[in-house]
Every structure is written in structure tokens, then in C-alpha cells.
Amino acid sequence: MINISPKMLPRLDEIETALLARRARADAEGWLSEIEGIDLTLTFLRQKRDQTRRLAKIAPIDLGMPDIRSTRS
Image 1 (cartoon, rainbow, N blue to C red):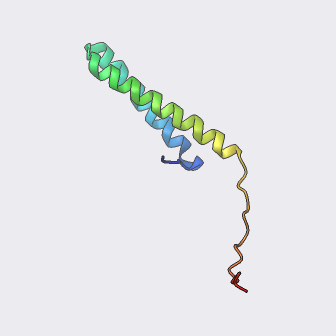
Image 2: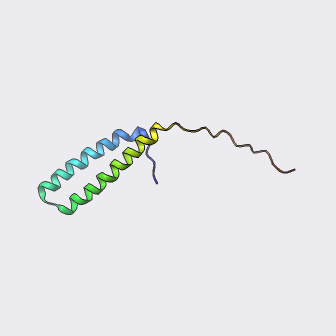
Image 3: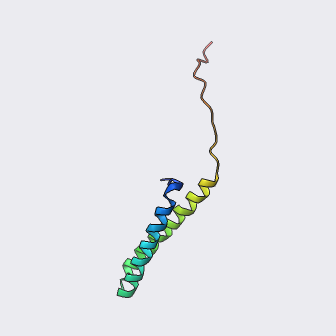
């Protein structure tokens, strides 16, 4: 699964705007299969954007440095 950097959220908004314009044209032209594909892409884009926003609110957890000393006795 790909995680998107929160810095890319404005780009996702631009992509959504372009897809909505393409969908309007496809609707005007009657391209039903194109509309279906664009709707599916919009659904995935919105899910990924929502996931990215949720993950951006979660603070990273510091796991610290692992102890590399030998545990053999």
C-alpha cells in the first residue's frame, strides 16, 4: 500500500479538479464507460486523501535506537 506525504495533498486537490472537468466532458459527450472509470478513480483519490489527512494527525512514535550488544553469555 502506498502512503502519500501530506505535502502532496494540494496536488491531490489539483488532480481531483482535473478529473471533475474530464467527468463533465464525458457526461456531455455521453461517454458512459469513461464516466464509470473517472468515478472509480475519484473514489480512490478521495479515500487516499482522507487516509493521508488522518495519518498526518498522528504523531510519529520514537522507537529509539536498538541495543546491538550481544545477548550471549
